[in-house]
Each structure stands twice: as structure tokens, then as C-alpha cells.
Image (tube, rainbow, N blue to C red; front, side, top):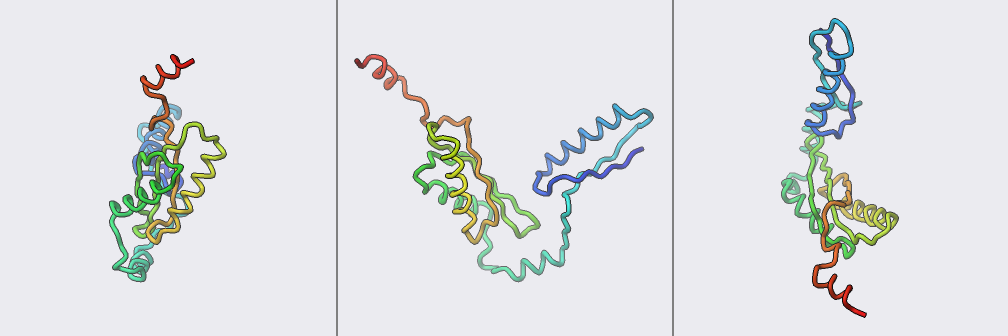
Length: 165
């Protein structure tokens, strides 16, 4: 029997940590002779969780200002959608860290003709706009390259382009 603890980044989701645990377990069992079973536990690196400190942070925060994940998502969608260079907001995920910190991950569509430099500058601006909110501590902006968001011409416009002199 082998007991292993693996340090992972603290912002990984629970499902990502479970996937890492399973991969480590399978690899040890398959590559180390004589091992019948492995118990693997993934933990966030250098994360010290103190319930007393968390409770104090909650008490010190403005109790009337606490809003739900749905309200944080709506606020993020409004901030992102208000920018003229954002074609659409494809997804917003709200994460709570240590019960008091809020991280927002947002997927957006921009003009497909935008350069990488322009898209990167837009993402930096949007990140700062979100982090200016009292409700959002950190934000990550991702470009959704799978969503079309009117990137291709319609069939009628394509015929007009082909048929026009």
C-alpha cells in the first residue's frame, strides 16, 4: 500500500484534482512492481485555511454587500457586454475561494479580424474593469474561438459578393 500527497495549484477545480489523483494512482500501480493499491490526495500548494480567520474576514466584510453568485455573474456580463469591442459573452463562471474571495472566469467573442495584440489588450482592459468591482477579487478573460458570433458572411451576402462585378 502506498500513500501519496500531491501538491497542485490552489485554483484547480475539484474535478481537475480528482483527475490528477487518478492519473498518479494508475501510473504508480502500473509502473512500480509489488504495489497493490495507492491512496493519492491532491492538495493546494501553500494554502493555509484557517476557519477562524475566514470567519473574522466574513464578520469584517460588509454583510449588506454580500451578493450571490448569480448576481456576480450578471454584474460581470453587464461590464463585459458594455464594451463596444465585445461581440458576445459566451460564459461566466463564478468561483469562491476560502469562502470570501470571488474569482470570475469569462469567455468572450471578439471581432475575428482582431489581431492577437488587440485581443490581448482588450482582455487586459476587461480584466481591470471586472476587478474594479467591489464584488470581484480576480478575473480571467478567455477568448472563445469556437463560437462564431456572426464571423462568417450569410449565404445571401456570400452570393452578393460572388455575383457583384
